[in-house]
Image (tube, rainbow, N blue to C red; front, top):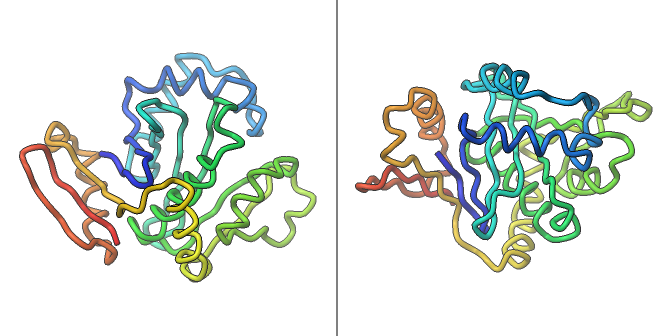
Length: 225
């Protein structure tokens, strides 16, 4: 399963990806943005993957210009009240001062509100991480009361806040990326028998933002407005 938009692709995390992700996560460039900074062993990574490979956590590997460059995660999903927490990391500093983080941040929020139609998005950002704070505030995330002196600060965004900003941000993102195509979520034929992918597909199919669906020999495709 993958979601593609603005020249970026987000592939559903598979077990064959987790060693690469472990190495990224242990990189000080990434680890310094997290409260947990202990070295992660291969055994720890395998246990972690078992714990998140379900319908309550959506981890994807970001691909850009044919290269895997990072991870987005949407975790701690509560399907009853439709709340989740999002996060991003990019291990290669060459992308940090480009438009790529801003585009990824927007797409992550778009997935939260348009693909799965959750009501509230959350993000934890370290107090000293001013660049990430700027990204999330641009999208409409707000620092929550009582978080001013907390090290790992909680930000939240509502559907209403996102929808108010989305048209203007979407235009800016399309200009930055040079890509105005609609978002597409695809399920390749090779994953038709994957029970977890099929659970996610059932959730996707309920979105009111789907403009078209298509089934071919290559797979099933959901186009978003």
